[in-house]
Amino acid sequence: MRRAPAVVAGVFLVTLLAALPLATAVRGMIETSLGRSLRADAVADGVDNDWWQEFTAQASGLGTTFTPSVIGFASTLDSVSSVLDARRPQGQVAGALAIYLAVWTFLSGGILDRYARQRPTRAHGFFAAAGVFFWRLLRLAAVAGIVYWFLFTYMHQWLFDDLYTRLTRDLAVERSAFLWRAALYVLFGSMLIATTLIFDYARVRMVVEDRRSAIGSLVAALGFIVRRRGRVVGLYALNSLVFVVLIGLWALVAPGAGGAGFSMWVGFVLSQAYLLARLLLKLQFMASQTAIFQASLAHARYTAAPEPVWPESPEAERMAGPPSAAPALRRS
Image (cartoon, rainbow, N blue to C red):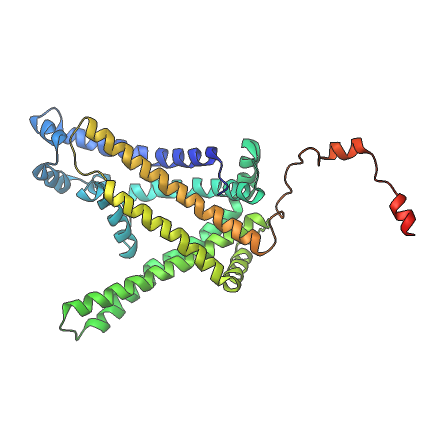
């Protein structure tokens, strides 16, 4: 995979900076609730369910997100459940998420350009490409927002409120109702995956081919996916398998509700390592999609030719002088 360490570090830093203000705000709420009481020592040594229930009952705003689901692997399961159940994020979390997505949209132009060129672009080249493609990718992101809004607002409601009610109205076995709901989850998840694939390749085509139209990039991406569906689906399945393995490993090593001290820092390091692995996998998706697109349409050198390397550089050709015309004269 063609990846620059600076890109990985930059994306990880953006993620950390986006989460830091929210974490600091929740920390202040917890500190205000506990103060210097004896209960603070008990909470530091482990989970105090009585205090947690009191805190949750009195909390408002961002404090309502501090629930047992933030611990270890439960946070991953809660994130998946939030997507499938179309739960809206809390206001401040939604604001931070919007800022993060805007920054990610800016960086993605430089990242895709770096992968497409297959050579280091340095800081000036990276940010120049990010600036050029930012507004184009932002328009594409706006279209994506409308599509996802429709899926989560109307399609989800129709599937899980209207259709599910009709399918299970006369059922007497709870297991049958569960299977119907699971099938609808698979259907809704497939819609999200298909939508994500289309917009992923629309971003790739916009950057690699220097496109300006968001709609044109979407149409071109859909055409590419239809024509190369075997390779596209195979690549997505392979990347998804790596993601499943990562989730499985995280389930095995995810920290629980430990006490303060060494175990707390071990849990923190493991959590950050998991987030870093998730970011690496995200970049792997982008790099592999760019590579398969360039290879499929012979675009490997479309964006820009590699930097000249001796002895094939223009300077070497100048020093060698003009090519001899003797062979042409002999042929004539």
